[in-house]
Image (tube, each protein chain N blue to C red):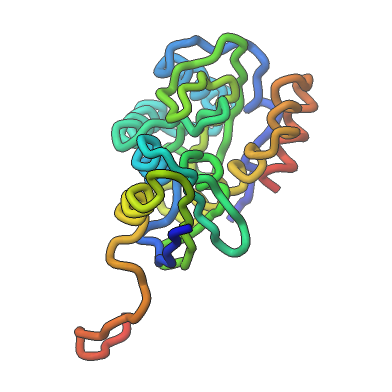
Length: 97
Length: 150
């Protein structure tokens, strides 16, 4: 089952939750976001906002079904601003925010 | 700084709201105004409208959470109505909203907004909570919602 670890690009309030649900809706796949041991179906805005997840929080997205890879890509596109947060690269001269 | 509870009995009604989403939002705003919590109704309505244009308020499972951060309130405030027929808030699962909760949070209270939204959502994903909100009398609804946002 394809899965990816991401850092959230935004606080997970109602608007992004709906965007994710709409992005995932057209695919034949069950996609879940797990954050702090709590699982949310990404097609349910309510389950997503229940996570109370904030910008920068880490989550794991897992997809299952015929369209799993495509669905995973679509959801990652909305939830994670950049590629999966595997190896953070410093190109800002090492300045902390 | 005073800390009023986000929900008081005056902010809950069992009267059926209009089935049009905009009219239903006005219906909820009336509750907030009548409870004396609204400084400026026009600006509250505008701020809700802006939020609505950014993305709808239907959350699935028969829930709509119209909301805004607005200077029209000085304390986080929620108002509740339930609809027998349902209000079409353009929800991803196409289920009409029968439980409506308006969330208004002061403009400078971003953390409060996310906190209140996630508490409400956590409560409302629980089928038992949804059933109680659909069937309870007014005091029952008030106590259920108070537990959820506590």
